[in-house]
Length: 225
Image (cartoon, rainbow, N blue to C red):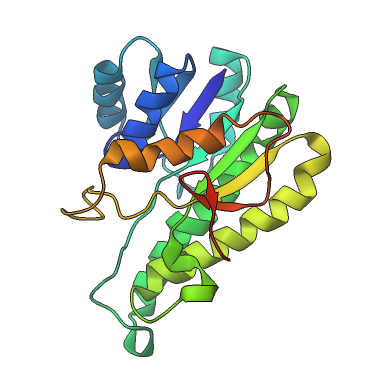
């Protein structure tokens, strides 16, 4: 099984890559910097392969060709890369330039990458797409704050639902996962262990063929939309 994890050079992405490799996957450890990707892959071991990938780059078409040439296909895509957990902002006075930047990485990045890699995923026997989201994006429980991050993740959840419906006939399981408040550079100290947050992502990435699709989960349990 070949898995691609975006933003895999640190934190949650790196731990997700570690756990997938531990389950026998060949993991493409992607980062915007080639050096960061290579360092992470070295640390993760023989089943990790570095891949330079900027999800906001102008042209992603070469990524699919590179993956097919080097690995023959793709089975799992984990859209983990994200920016701007903007605790300093409120929606009523938000800097919309920050919102646009968040949407570019947190929504358009995964969307464009999915479109680019979908031909490879459709050829897989067990294709999985996992969009790393946040309970902050739950409309049921939503309050104020972090407008750029929250709005971009709400949109990512909507994309998850649409893709799950459209790709169900192809056997592609598409789910959104909230890892919880995790102690990472973005989440800050005091959160749950990174290992625990990554475990829910890996669960969704390794679902059986009759597993759920179009869901929103934390720790393998449904969250309200």
